[in-house]
Length: 216
Image (cartoon, rainbow, N blue to C red):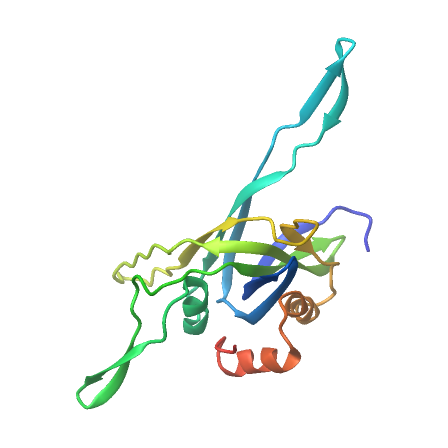
């Protein structure tokens, strides 16, 4: 790797997967691509250092640790299967319109918003060399998203969707909250690493691609 510092030049491929905990063993299922990534922001809150004083000086110090955090993801528009997954939506019902069946998804008491693992790829450049960093938050829960839309004027106003989630420590013995894999030389290689972190098999990943993010 180049000795110079890395500069962030891009963000792509947000993925999600259902979080499962069994006696401290964490696994992920139903992993799939969330949408096309526009922007990501992670804000972390840590506890203050806990200092012990003796002989009028600070003799010992316990470092402040991760306490909580907020993830904000901006995407072009959620894949429908991913929307149902992160918001815990029920299977759609069907209504008949002009003798055609139309699916309708109901938002209400039947929703059970689950914990998720979330990952994405950050692109870097250093001394002209481009690398791709697979990154993951181990346990988050999405808030019900806000939506806004505006009419088109003379030119198209490209509109995006913003998602917010609360970040937690996972239930492993280490209580991890983030995983950061080694930089890869291509986006495809980084995506493959991300899929492994989120429990996605190669067959499931191929199905996700062919179905526009609808694999389970």
